[in-house]
Structure formats: structure tokens, C-alpha cells
Image (tube, rainbow, N blue to C red; front, side, top):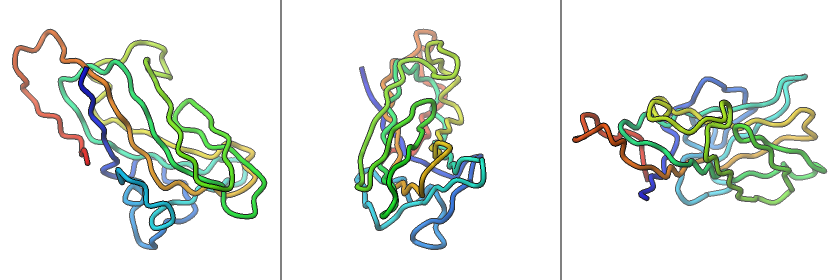
Amino acid sequence: MPTLTVYPQADGYYQLWDSVEPVGSDGYETVDEATTDDDTGYLILDKFTTIAGAASFAFGSASNILPTQIVITCRAKIEAGVSGGAIAVDASTEVMAAGYATFTRTFATNPFTGAAWAVDEMKNLELYVSTVVPVLGKVRVTMLNATITYTLPTNFGIWPEPIVMRTA
């Protein structure tokens, strides 16, 4: 089955980050690379009182593909001098360490509904990362992308709409 790796195109609904590097960048610009740049571009998530630090990113829209699974890849670390913490990528949690780690989560079904992925769920795709309360320190996120394994729906003889997500 074919795959499509997509990257953030814009900041999404949640923009509860502490800071971005380089200063003045949009959050999505710090995590949208195919090859990680670690400390060159990143955003820092921190806990705000009892609310988790969170960032979501719009991945655009893909029409006429039927996902069979989505693999989310994230690269992050806990800021230096912090003893531990965790980060959540959509409905899955990863315990973090002081050095950068790349981790993936595979979703064969929609993690919020438990149902198989649908064509319409690829329109306006938005993914988020957040700290897990209580976080013991700031989390530095440097990469986020999604690889979609898909088939073509059987009810389309031709593609009336193109795939418009940004790939590499």
C-alpha cells in the first residue's frame, strides 16, 4: 500500500507553548522538518498551573485517500537539569529523558472513536502534542510528522480533488 508523509503547514487550535527557537518563528516552522535539526529549531512546552502545555498543528487536507493507519513521529527531550516528565502525542504518552528521543505511535484506528479511519478524517487533519500534568519540567519538541498508509476509495473512478498536504 502507498504511504504519504506529511508535515505541519500552520499552527493549530492549541498554542500553549512557552517559547520557540529561533525567536519569532511560528511554532509549526520549528517542528516541520523531515530530518530533525534538534537544537536549531524547537518549541518548549511547559505546564501552566494545572493546564498542560500543548501545541497543535494543521497538516492541510488530503482528499480521496482512505487511511489504513497513521504513524505519528515526534522527537523531543526534557530540558537540562530536570529529573523527568512525559509528553503526549494525541492519545498516547511517552516518558521523556534528558537527551533527544524519537518515538512513533501507530494508530490503525481513530484513537478517539476506536473506529476505522474514514476519508473525511483526512480533511483538515490536525495533530497535537502536550505535556502530561504534572510535568516536572519543560519539554523541548523539535520534530512532528505523520506517515499515512492508504488505499484509494473504491467509489472514485477518477480523483476529483488533489492531495494538498505538504510533503517534504
